[in-house]
Image (cartoon, rainbow, N blue to C red):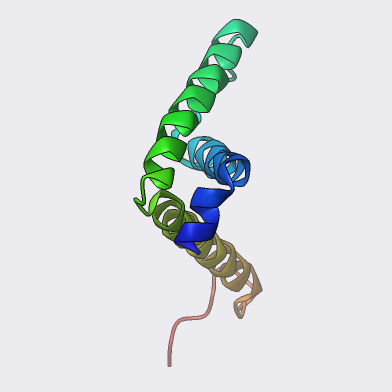
Length: 103
């Protein structure tokens, strides 16, 4: 897989860019929206940084694999948060709006 990604530089770049954007939006995104020029600057810097990471990927460093592990862990965390939220809303009720205590 590493050799195939090294041979297909455009695919490697697009995967790295997609992972970078996902990680940024999931972890580092500020609560308030940035002004449009700052938003453009952030994405241009991510595109440039992704190019540098693509060069390291072509030089046989497992950049895509490491980013994939990070994304999978973030998706697992998000799944766990959704499960906990769903479980909390579905819990048994005793009429007071609070879950029943264990017996």
